[in-house]
Length: 113
Image 1 (cartoon, rainbow, N blue to C red):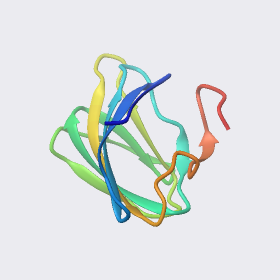
Image 2 (cartoon, rainbow, N blue to C red; image 1 turned 135 degrees about the vertical axis):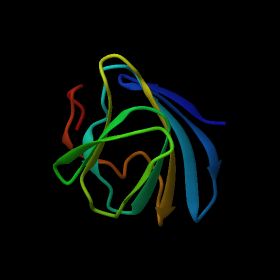
Image 3 (cartoon, one colour; image 1 turned 45 degrees about the horizontal axis):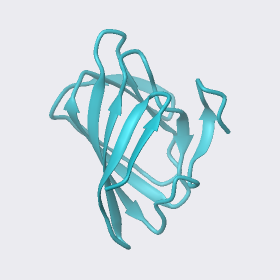
């Protein structure tokens, strides 16, 4: 099982095949993923520990444990945790490619491109 630590938290790959990939992603309190798009995949997020601050195309909303959201190919998105609590969510990716290099970062707190 692939596991990777990132400056904002960590993820582990739970399942992968040619049609989909499933990750469990944990975001540290007060941290957030880059504001990004994907050119080759869509994502479905299911919050397993919240609350979560989710930004989709510039609109931020709070989501709670048990809620989910769909993110289409090319849609700008970001997941963030509140200052007091971390976030854990399941990400189901569908599309034609699931590599980490299918990330176009629009904003990033850690200076990554």
